[in-house]
Image 1: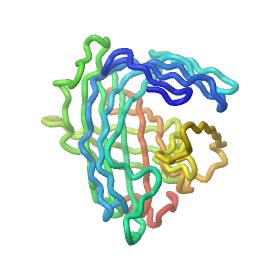
Image 2: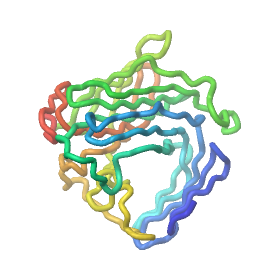
Image 3: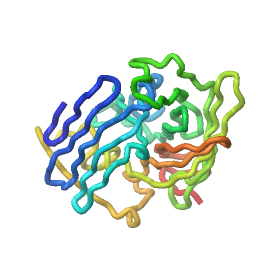
Image 4: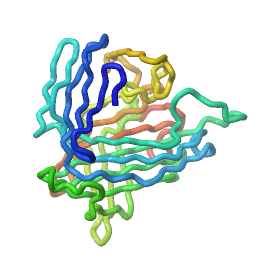
Length: 290
């Protein structure tokens, strides 16, 4: 699986992979290995309609938790990833996604808001994951959530499905927001497992990542846009100077530290909050928190 200087090598199916980005004009390169910590698991199918988001989305995603090792090369720096401390997630989505060059859907629909949260979290001996889509009035269009064992040795990981996966009974959230942004500053995710007390997960953001750097919402280099047989481009931003409420900067991931009262973990909270959201005081499409 190769395109230009970028390739993915499957070292052991459903377990180890190698990701390589050879020298190129952006000055960014990598030689990384993925070491799994959990089995793979699929999210539920997500079906959102034009009446909800203005376009169809019929998709799902396969996830796995693990570690990264190797090196990231930047124009003026090389970053070595220590496998003992570099937690990560690996996911692959497929289906009908509202990305790429636009296709006419007939008469235009009024703009629609969308609220999306996606939170894979590492804990000492297990992993948890939740995702949800909500509408402008806080109505929940889709949610799912799972807990899986984390294995100390790769050979202990089930090759396909983990028989000990547990599905959440419910998920909810109560976030606080960074003023003049649509970025979560703290709060809680609440999960309910079968035959157990509700679990309150405290969220502490550490680092924000612009998803437009991966193509999400980028006005010129978005996903699925045809640029020719091979096009390579790099861009950088001063994160202290960007407008966090510009549409292309709304979609982010935050690296978060998490606590559930008895243990601590680390993970990601992805956020895409567009449109009114009365629950959290947003009344316009891109107004910021007070």
